[in-house]
Length: 624
Ligand SMILES: Nc1ncnc2c1ncn2[C@@H]1O[C@H](COP(=O)(O)OP(=O)(O)OP(=O)(O)O)[C@@H](O)[C@H]1O
Image (cartoon, rainbow, N blue to C red):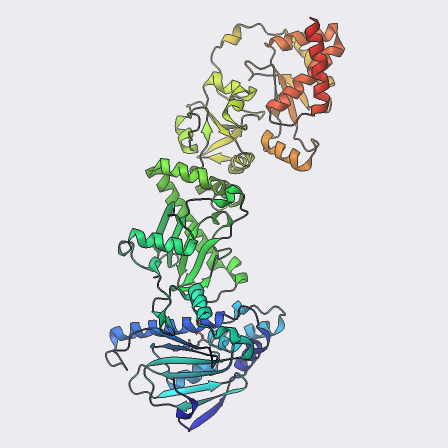
């Protein structure tokens, strides 16, 4: 590097434009956090200058120092506390220097500066949003020196020097080669940056995929290529895996990989990975989003919040879009229309990818489902925009699937009978319990398939979806099932309680269970069980109420229920008789009947009253 004494003496002093002064004042006096981003800004400018040169050289034959390799060299002097960032890009002419490093060209900057001057919270990410990235150098440097020479052969080289207050000096310097060198004399309080290791780490963090070699004191730093911007057939399997391990901090290979680029409606290059494991499932706490946002290979935001819907937080990878402004702030990122578009395109593409995987290799998809299905369920309940596309990806057990095997809603629909109108589901902790319960009886004799859901969220998912391929999703504990006509059954030979006794019994039961059920009525769905609790609320399934019951710790919030009784069942017929002989004991039996129905519905019965009641019923039974 050249020292001060080499500089040509004829130096002009120039004033910064008023807005620049204002900006520099903020940069120098108010921004103390995230100062390391100055390096990202300067490297990004260097990479832009190199990119422009690479492009120019395609058409222009006459360029300065055409043999110079395209690269970024960084020298860190620990003793002198300086950092020099040199690129062999297009460089700047005198006019360009004055224009670029003395004014703020962007029109919106005035308003921005006013905003920045007024807010207490000075977000460093806002800098550069209006094309003022270079000035961030003054966050760490007391003096900045820019040595630059344009690619254009006729131009002289120049030295620009400023301490960031009021003005800068500009002088001619003949012995420069093409490109730009930016020399930072670090401020005392920014001395920590005079460390090659620190600088290397910052580069790895922000600029690891800049497509030009970056060296720090002669050592190459960015060895990992921006493979997402390459063609698929240029990339080897190991390279993909190596890249995945690098960005995901992973040891094993990814489960799925999706590499795609799109031009419309946005220009996007995306490389997404589904990891092998889901640590959230093991109770490691909620994952951070794992996709980094890039703009032309320059990192805009690591683990970008709001880039993808929250339920896709298990994805790792990179999303690169030219359309993203460099230095978009965290706030703008969440709600800009551009981000919303990006989110929609990438989410849609990923869901399409999953649908293909499910079709082409269903065994592997099942493995994915077992590991990451919880996120799709979360999406189906929280992401209104995509839930229709998530629905076909859901998997459940059903009365027609083998134990432990899954079916999709689509497959269910293909098995539906002509006269069947709805898709039915029932929740229970496992298959055995569901199949032993009363809710399945009506379906079993009609040979109608029922989806088994085992987790409380499943009922929220299906209730939220409300329908699939035009068929309503109906919980089997609901009042209106709208089932096809049942065929002749064995039970039809069983004698039914006469209608007068039945009417009397239901009235009596209604009184006895006052406050517990809204209605007692004859059941047309039961076959083997004496009674069942039916939901009169068409939205909340029993399981959803169980969740509410646990959260609220009482049964007050329970939805309206009907107790349906089976008039052919021995117990019901016996109860009708017992009521006339020993009403007190009949009341015990009725209450137990209700508690049993409650338990079969997965709801919590009060154990204190029940245990005592059971003993009294048993006492009576052993006497007989
Ligand atoms: N290393 C460089 N080589 C050539 N020109 C440069 C270099 N650094 C900066 N410039 C010029 O100075 C201009 C201003 O840079 P600055 O970082 O302030 O804003 P920007 O790069 O336009 O915006 P942003 O930083 O938000 O991308 C650049 O547009 C570019 O023309």
